[in-house]
Image 1 (cartoon, rainbow, N blue to C red):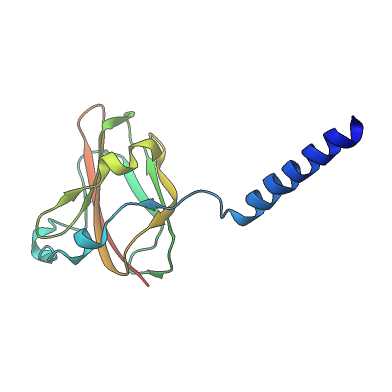
Image 2: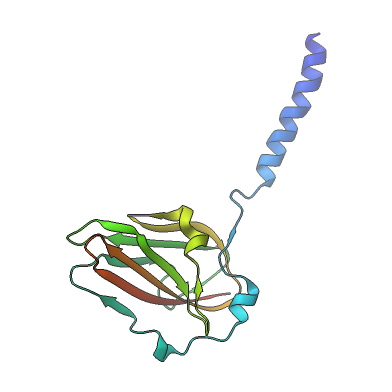
Length: 153
């Protein structure tokens, strides 16, 4: 009986360990499709400032990818929000892909949004230059917007 159990369990354990070692971890998130990336860009004159902040709104710190950086796939997105005088209002957070027709990326990252920021560890983006506008506000209505551009190769 012990030999039969070992005969059945040992191959199962080997298969499980082999599959774990072959997997690369978390599947990449497709934040922007190839079709969206190929769309015409929004004229930079329409970006409405690279950084704007009203009153004592939250501060936005883009930790990764850095502004103007060239990064390899997959990309890690790490943005920190630093509250001003009031608490951050999660309902005001918005990520937009700045193309001729702006694409709202917020629903695609909603599981990665907190009052501390946006942290998406494994993002698959098409090669090319990407410009994102990020907005965040507080419970008093003060809003901060920041535009950042990076290249994926």
